[in-house]
Length: 153
Image 1 (spheres, helix red, strand yellow):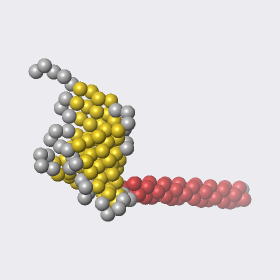
Image 2 (cartoon, rainbow, N blue to C red):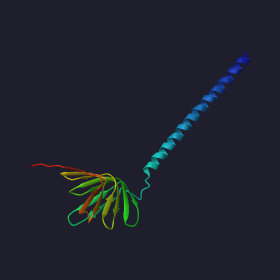
Image 3 (cartoon, one colour):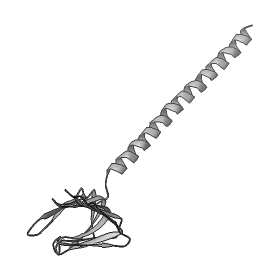
C-alpha cells in the first residue's frame, strides 16, 4: 500500500511540474508577442521622411497658395518630394493628390498622380498637373474629367 501512495505522489508532482512549466511557457510567449507588437507600432510611428508634415507656400501678387503634406523628402537642393495627402489651398481653389515634386526656388509644383482640383463652380479630376508662374498658371495632364456647375442666380 505504501508503494501505491509513493507512485501517486511522484505522478502528482510530475504532473504539477509539467502544468507549471506550460503555464510559464504561455506567459513568456504572450510577453514576447506583446513586445513584438509594441516594436512594430514604434517602427510604424517613426517616420523615415526628411520632413514630417511639411508646409510651404507659393506667393504671387494676388494670392497665396498653401501647400501641406504628411511627408517630405529632399531630392536635391531645390526640389522636395511631397507625399501622402498633399493639398494645395488658396482662397479660390484647392488641389488634392498623393505625390508632388515642389521646387522651392522657382515656386513650381508638378504631379503625375491622380489629382482633384476644386473651385466653387468647377471640379477637375486629372492624371497630373503642373503649377508654374508663381501659381498663376496650372496645366492638367492626361485623362481629365471636368465638371462645370452652372446656375442662373
